[in-house]
Amino acid sequence: MRLALALLLATFAAAPVAAQQARPSQPAPSSPPSQSGQSGQANPFNQVAPSGKPSQSEEVLRQRILLREKFNKGWDVQNEDPREKRARCKSEARKRYTVIHQLKRRKFIKDCIARKA
Picture 1 (cartoon, rainbow, N blue to C red):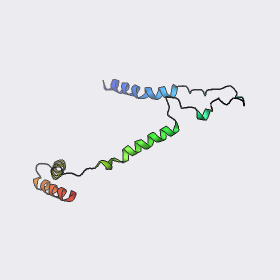
Picture 2: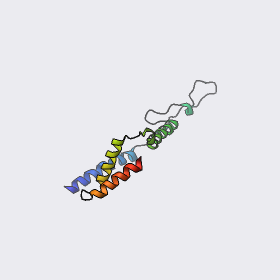
Picture 3: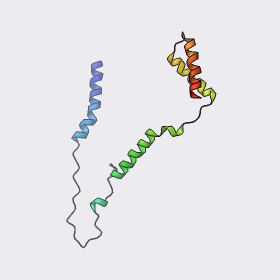
Picture 4: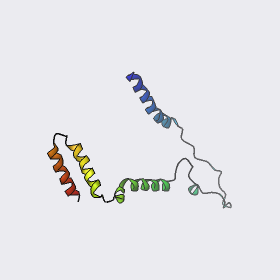
């Protein structure tokens, strides 16, 4: 059973990779030779990017937005009221010390509250 699941997982993981490699590259659109008298002909550098792929400037903008969201988490920090601070310190003490070590827990809670003040 485990072997069958491993094979299924491997095929699902490898299928998108194989599909990307097997996809033929799209040929560049060819246009007839331009005449000097035609001013209405589009320049290939001014063409809009295909709807499937964003242009380079759009991609750069998207990357900047993602980085801003990732690293600017500190702007939304709000001050804790004493009850929230005490509850957070208690939960941290529960994670660090078992029920047997009540004295260590109390000391940790007092230090935590004093430290964060």
